[in-house]
Every structure is written in structure tokens, then in C-alpha cells.
Length: 370
Image 1 (cartoon, rainbow, N blue to C red):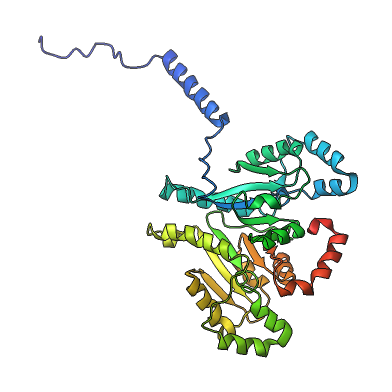
Image 2: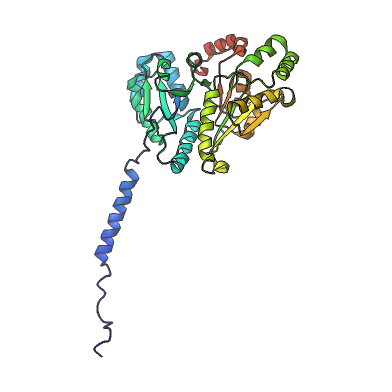
């Protein structure tokens, strides 16, 4: 019949073996190119819109060996060594997990707010010489970190540049530079290498703060040191409804809270990738109300508040596993370190004069501690 379909006609849509093989080669070539092609990095926010975190090269990376060479053999040998090892990535330092967590928060923020520039911006702030910059850049690219802003001062103190970079937090191993930054009104802390390996959460930034002389001023600690605990408890009861004056890291907590509220505004409170903790030696019943009322008066939230009444902080921090814990007392910092918490010392307030001489002696024995 003339209307019947001719099933004997060849199927011209079927690819030949040569075409199939060619397409396979094309796909393989594209996959290979994609694997080696540089990934497009996210657009950097304008400094005036960002939360700027300045980190020194010695807290971002472990440079203990290099620092030892600098101290023992001088700057020329140090620079030459860095040039000779440019292709060898530096190992992660104590601030590395913190920086990775900041970048993870940025990913979540970009998904919720594609056009917003209210993001973390990490700046490498170092007194290294520019000749060392290639190894630092190679190390940053090796780990896939999104750090584009560098400040390399060639042996001079970088503190003068912190305000120009609109810095919200400065982290360094040099306690003197940290003190200079705090004196300039910039939140800052001295970081130390953790004494134990610890696995930290990758999807949630966790930051723990001490209260007095960190988030708050040292006015209450002055009373403890000068008049004792009984006078302190009485003072806090009398002034329970008077907010404490702010401490050096209050502004950084405000910055974290600002980003948290961006998640809350999208009904994403339960999946917010930022969590904050107050870990204080204060007693809840005797002196805790003033702390909580101060935060309320500032319009700030803290996700978890732990009042330890003088008990060691290390075991609690071991359960929290923060990316960073800030405290003004070195014995709390050291206790946290012993159990594997990455801790940072805030050299502020009356408590510093009680262990300043001890810190100087330790610095003489081990320059790397600073």
C-alpha cells in the first residue's frame, strides 16, 4: 500500500562510531580544561560595606620554622629562604580554620543576598617584605582562600594601616602590635598555636567571648582586684540596671550580630551559620543579671551564655569547639589551649598589669609565643 511506512529506511539520526568517539574526546578535553582552569572568584565587597578581618601571616599560616630562621640568621637569609621555597605551600596556622569559616558564611550570605556587600573581607596584614609575597600568594591559592587584599610593610609596623583598611578585627602573634591596635580603638587579639589537633565544624562559624575586659570594660574587674569578690557582688547588685561600658571586642560582636540578623530576616534563624557564646567566670545569681541587661541595652543577642562561677573554662570550650575564643586572662587562654581550643588573648584592662612581667619573661624564652 502506498501509505505504508517504509521501515527499511536507514536511521540517519544515529551517530557514527567516529562521531561518537569525537564527541567523547571533546567532552574529555572540556572536563580536563575545567579541572585546570582558574575558578572565578567571588566579587570583592567595597571596604566601607564589608566586615574587615585583618590577619597576620604568622596566624594565617604556621611559620614557626621561618620565624626561627629570621631570629637566628637575619632578614636576608629569611627572605632568600622564602624565595627558594615559593612553590612549597605554608602549613595552616591558628587563624586558618577561622578564616575558612568566615568564607563559608560569605557563601551562605551570597545565596540569600546576591547583590549585598555586607560580607566578611579578609586582609593579609603583615610586616613581611614584598619579596616574600609570592610564597604567601601561592599558599593562599593552594588552599583556595579568597584573600585579595594584602598589606606588606617591609619590616615596619602595619598598625598605622588598620584604620585605612577599616578593620573590624585584627589578629596577630605579636602582642605589642595587638596592644597598639587596641589603643587605637581597634578590636584585636594575640593568637597562639593550639596544643592539640581538633576537628572544627565547617558549616558554622563559632565565636566565644569572655565578658569583662573583652566585651565589656574592666570596671568590674578593677573592683575584684582592689576590693575583693564581696565588694564586687555588692557593686553589681547596686548597678544591675546600669549598662556596663563597652570593651575592646564589643564592636566585633555587633558586626557578627548584624550578619546574623540578615539570616533572621530571611526566616533562616535555625540554619544561621554564625553562633556566638559568652563564656564568663561570673556567677549567674550574684552578678549575671547586669551582663545580660547590658547586652539587651546594646540591642545585641548572644546565642549561648555560660556562667561558670570561677570554674575552669577549658572543659566547656572543649564541648563548644569554637573557631576562636577571646579572653583577657592568660591562664584562661592557656587552659583552653591545653584542651585543644584555639584561643586569643585580649591585652586590655587592669588584669594585664598582674601578668605583664610574666609575658615579657616568656617572650624572652620563646619569641614564637608572641
